[in-house]
Image 1 (cartoon, helix red, strand yellow):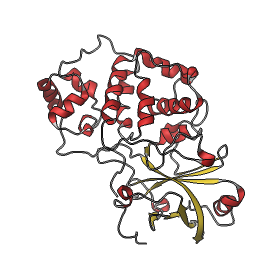
Image 2 (tube, helix red, strand yellow):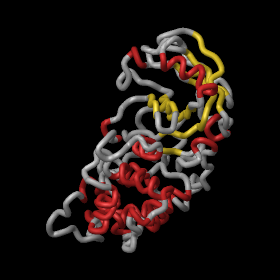
Image 3 (tube, rainbow, N blue to C red):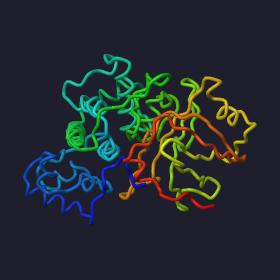
Length: 335
């Protein structure tokens, strides 16, 4: 399985000097015009710490500020974390905050407030503001950031990956996540209501499992290919799809069938709790950025073997579509 969510990375690697030279030749400050004229992939623009604003300033197409704009550099470095966006609702909601007349957070309905918090934590995953309204309002002074993010979202909205959302239903209908669409950690935690100012911040969350008591949901963040560099032998669990409707997943090493967590996994349907599965190929993309997860959707416990870890078979409520299924490994991992 390759990265089903992020924009493919083209080769060979290019330097910011090369991109700036090409931008100067094209002579436009519009990202979509640059990509169309050069045939480049948007991932080329976001290698390392390079951004479209960086390229434009290097090409003398956009003046550099006489004095640094507080917070601008850090925000521009977060632009790569929007490359995976692939549903029209999220892209449109995020983009409205790049406008001069962006709405105030407090004026939004609850659904859009949640999407706004997803945007907030995508920009500031370690917080930094007292309220969401304060943080989002601060974007009004970030002209370069708003300009670049707006252009990036405009480009993404015209790509084949951009689709209408397929929202969660039932007990998760209030959560603005879409089945078989891609999300990063900040968006997932914000959408679930777990990430919050004064509490859990996405930038300090590294677990692959999450019990969310408010939504009575176990969220499983699954990475298929666990490299020796990123995962110690004790957490290199064997996770893989058995079919389009069944997934094999190993719990944490501390979980026994008789433990409270093990019992919740087995009895969740009877006890009224739920399970959501998210899947990604590996920890990082080819360009070294964190790879997002694809929401597989809700799942139901069917059986398990073993203890510490438990090897659980989950039944997916939504069969894996061909674009995801075709990228999964054709053989099961060996012991």
